Image (cartoon, rainbow, N blue to C red; front, side, top):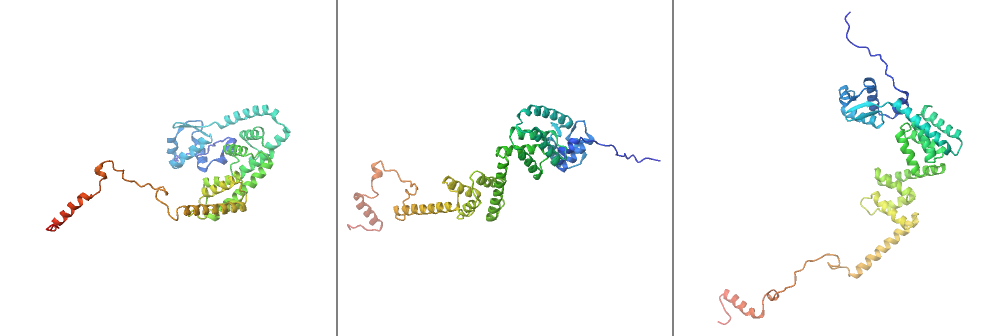
Length: 348
């Protein structure tokens, strides 16, 4: 019987567990598909972009983006146009050894119960990683506890935040989240409670201003609004009043509202009542200034007073220039000329 020449694809491709646990959940579908394709055809081999383009598994643009994502996640090493897979097993072993060494050195710095620390790490591993948390996340827990001085409950809450944001298995983003909390002072349970209250205030202000202005805010305006709550400690009511205080404008920008709030804060204003009195006094003062100015100029002002410069002719410097257009001596001669034109002279 003649064979068709078709090959049966039944070989198995293995992937390390660490890939599934640490990377698969954070990759886009295109990046995941590209990595699996690379693992089948170029495992332990170098390849270049032409190899990927020729495979036609995705468009050229999608392949470029997928490969960039794999490089960013340290799954592929790219040197010029040549690429190869990262040995993620070897890297995991190296990270584990490094962590164990650092952990042993840090035991002396643990002021609390060592068993309590171990229970925290185990709880995070079981809850967020199905009991298979990789080494970098253990190192992150160490960093939060020993360097950032997070309370244990704060560390757990940070991983819960990561789960809510769908970044809990992305070590890079989790490290950034930990650093952000540290820089903002969210290291204790009390500070974390204040943070939740503050974030709710920001959300309420954004909702209120969005309804008033009938617009969605971009990153710059969102940062402004957050700073009014965080840095200026302005209430939702005061921010709303600041917006309404700018109603005289044809278009109210968030920068206008920010300028108003900054002026009020500099004047020690913290309530709507104080802001109302401040604006009323400012309005009265502006009217007084206008009245004094109007009285000084009797309803009008000169060009010079208004700041308008009028160019004048320089003063004459010669006798000829100073001489009038017609002198008394010239008057008789001029009249005689006129009479001659019309055919007569007063002497005839």
